[in-house]
Amino acid sequence: MTATNEEKILQLLEVMQADISGMKADIAQLKASQEELKASQEEMKETLSEHTVVLNAILEWADECREADRFPLPKIM
Image (cartoon, rainbow, N blue to C red; front, side, top):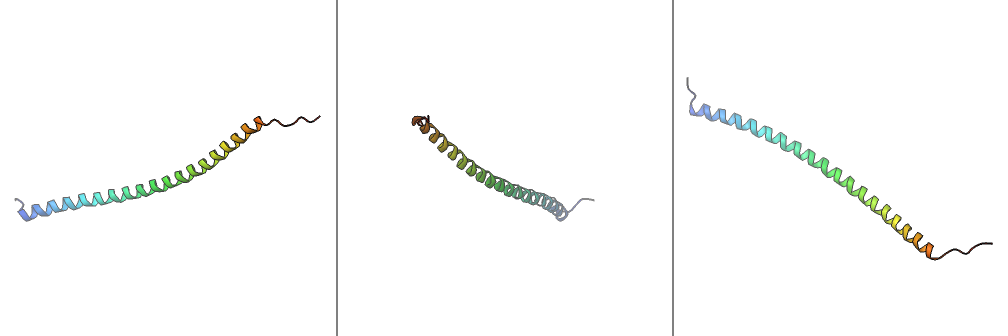
């Protein structure tokens, strides 16, 4: 028994709907992963900002130490 055109169309529609369902699941997973990446990126930005503050403080301290060498302290007898 051969399938009619309508039956063939319905079979194709079923296959296409299954494919679309799979694509929707993949898209949802990609969106969730993207949100995780955004959150991780924000954490990295915060950490970078904190490290920048610390590094700048160390550089300022190093400049002060370098200048202290230029002005020797008086000797105490």
